[in-house]
Image 1: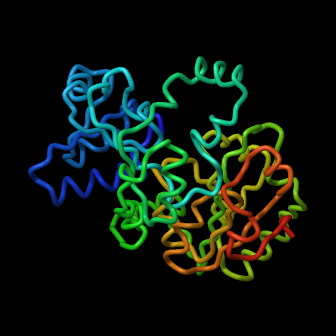
Image 2: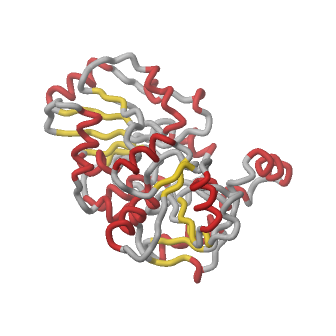
Image 3: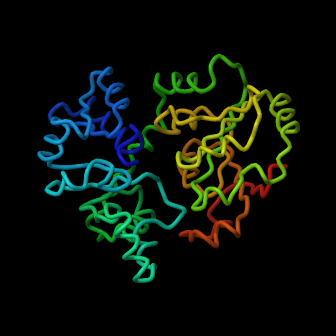
Length: 312
């Protein structure tokens, strides 16, 4: 996450180490001063990357743990560290990293390397949840079988446990509003943000609000951080339709509290399978999406739930 958020597998590993492994010095490094402030208020060791302590911590780190590559911390300052890529999924749906990059034409590879020089650092090790899922980790990171440990994921442990933080996070988004069902809509990132409108697929706001009222539900929409301009394309101010603006570091608190998950091409549904609740796949413009982004699996075979090609 480019060192901006306190989230995902590194977050839950960090919290576990602070609680259970007193003999390990674990430090959170971030480019976000607000994250550092919040962690220090909880008496957790955290340093701003561009501070003396941040630079010193990076230079002396024996092991670094990331979710999106070395640039989550600093590629320049951690060259001597053992790099463990924890990744940001239970099992990927879309092709990632080297499974995408290796098929680029040579000139496109060169342009991409020049534009994003820190993305394709191969880690020393990674983790997975099963021999089957580890196939993707190995191919996407160009790692051998011996370098992918079958440990399960810290975020999986977070999905299967309840904390005080979960209730606090839900209240941050929902406030004091009362409801029976929380419906959580978490679409994936789109390559061409301005070329796609989630609300263009037969959305009737009056019908949607009527449905939410009849079922005593609220709909929370969590767009990808790079896609938050989507909220400007729907002008509703109804309290049962809420845009989550990423004040929460990750989706897990709301995911655990939701009655139904709606997603499209995001691997977040693999996390949700752990709690065995209904999933709807809003496969808006399925063929258009698959033309631009290759998947590891056949979409209709791997996604275990009803498909809804439009809002109706």
